[in-house]
Image (cartoon, rainbow, N blue to C red; front, side):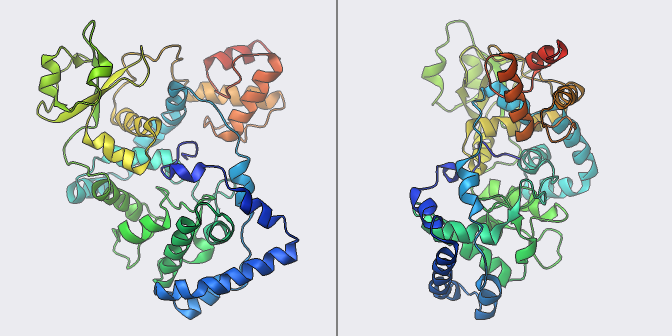
Length: 410
């Protein structure tokens, strides 16, 4: 699941001291303060169409999940280079599993492409990056009931209070409509839920009842989640049917990439300026307008179009967007980038990641399993191993350099 580069990017800012100070009150006093806030918040919910009965059922007696404050504040930080970020999200496991999901849900993806025009592989890649194809959506290690979390943030986080209040109201409206039950609404500490990690606002305003069961849900079968996310890309990202997101290109000698990166031109015009596709093939839609980006000097260069920007609407971090579209290409059968990033390692295979986890586990480091999927526990374990043996940099990256050192023994 995408946690370091969340599309709600500002949600990752540090929580204010006001929240921590509030919860440092004696427990009884703090709960009383929360109960007074719940009572005062009731009229706003009623004004949004939430019934008295629903509000009382959900909010009266609720205990705010104040652990969200510490979760936000104490998340371990990893300074990942772009190639490391991509290798973690566009992993061997995600590519293999994405291909299997694309085959398993081919009929659903056919419908989405036909009805909404969003490329199937982009949808599968978003699903993979956001929730590991639905694998973590109810995992208590990563997810929690969102109503107590949103209530704690709306009550006790002063700097973004209006946002958290709005999302709590959206969640209450969802419950009022019968789309969700509080006990089943499980998500991240910030309230994102389901296969493609919808915030309540997205669920409420962009959700699609694509399985025609009379309710909209990001949980269960992925029909509603994928169709609603396609609608998000169209409505918020202005996705264009039939266009590709980009292509990797080679630059002519002496080309000033910095001067051209804000200019939108047709592929054909870029070709006239000497740019060619890195794989040697022709530009498939020469009239589509794109712009140049070179994210890391000496690394791969890309012409990116409107559908790259559409994915950015889901999460504004460039790293996230590049990971999604690259994963989409890999699931579709494309290979890695032609031009490697400076200092990068090749993508470790699933078996190699599993070996890293197995060797770390044998040495007493907790990787939370040996399934070949690198989560936060594996990164923490790698960092601890790097620190123990003096392997620099201590970056938590489970790659080939770490594997080689592990094979030498402790």
